[in-house]
Length: 252
Image (cartoon, rainbow, N blue to C red):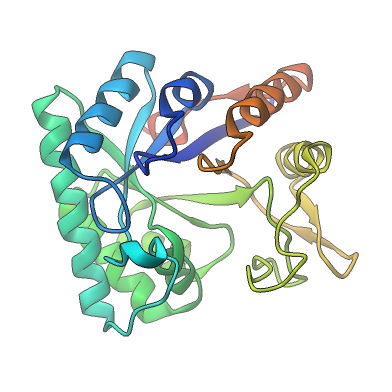
């Protein structure tokens, strides 16, 4: 039976976290840098516990004005320190609630930088390992993020996207391009089903690309995020795909 994890970036102020939480299996919680604060982190951890959702840290650049989507001129060590400090902050709050952080997924520009820059990827992997070697690192499927995680001895999950276009090399089409985002929900669902069931995606060039998908990102900040999550869950169930938290599954 095909199996996939559904992750979502939460605690970022979108306003519908409570509706999204029952529809996902892994929550990536903003750690107070690009978005969120101690109150939102506590509340999101509580929601995840209530619905049995795996808790993950979502560290990013401290640049709220650009929502962490602008690359900052930091050294690999400084980028790693961001991940270390923010993950530890969430770990402390989760521990207070009787929970444990199971995974880390960098946010925005930091995520994209780690995907293509080996030095940054290795610094982030080292930071995650220092926080807890049992943690799983989420990163773009086929990227340096996953290579560095495995080199460090971490478990790694290849992430794919429902609403993002892909380049022929398996990278995401840059957001600066008009064709970067897929607006049609039916096309998004079809892309996920093909990624999960066939391990392939149609790139912007028209050529198929082989991609190993462990987890699918559902963007939680869109106006129709909840409706799309419901639609995707129904489509996955109809296709016989089991939805399960990947960080928990690989520990069993």
